[in-house]
Image 1: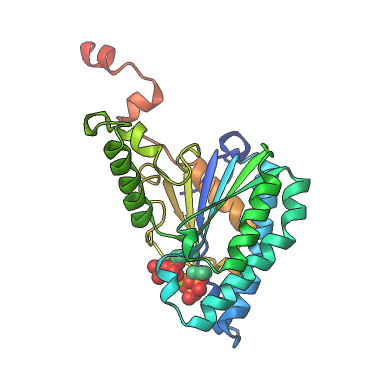
Image 2: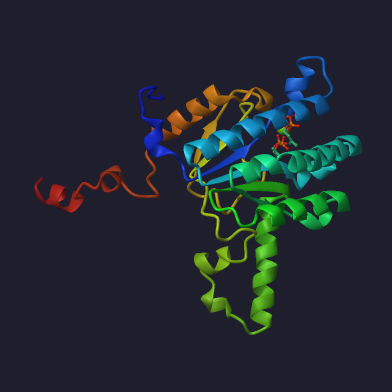
Length: 257
Ligand code: IPE
Ligand code: IPE
Ligand code: MG
């Protein structure tokens, strides 16, 4: 149960990741075409970026387009790329005003040239900002990211820069797309779907998952607050017992029994 009195301001996650799902259903339920759902979804992105910045969330990662989404109808893919380009350009002002750095992760070699150009322009224009990182996962797949890291690690071994024995979680992380971004504390998925869909497979190992019933274009401040309150009511245990998490000395407790 979510405690509505939880003081969400005290437990703002450092990193929130979002699977923004349900644009198509939002459109078809209104007799609109899917692209209109995607356009409406872009408004929720703006709201969320501004809210995260206002509340002091340091990293926000948004799943914008997956490696599997390339298999959608060509016209939808084309529309999504154009929409992405358009919004990156138009949100540069918002990012500059709020001192937000843009990062884009994924297999960018698959992006149309014009999209890649805008990605590079906005990334460069915002690279010196330090208030918040907005990470957009585009042409992104968690398995592909892990494979790509394995390729880079193998090359490092081949070139004599490291050895297989040195490989641990910390070293492996350095080969991921954005090694300096910490793992998400909270993953929100909208439209009542409870799956990861190949998002951040490595990084989500200990994230809290919050499923929102709301379709992405309807995701507003109230629903974001509800998700934050649900997160605030969770106990993150990282494999420990609840006594350990609460800082109770369980050895002393056992001895006194
Ligand atoms: C999410 O909405 C946007 C992308 C995956 C690009 P969908 O387009 O998946 O919407 P539904 O799931 O069909 O409703
Ligand atoms: C996940 O949504 C990808 C993005 C939100 C960009 P999908 O709609 O593609 O995922 P599935 O197909 O329902 O698993
Ligand atoms: Mg979907």
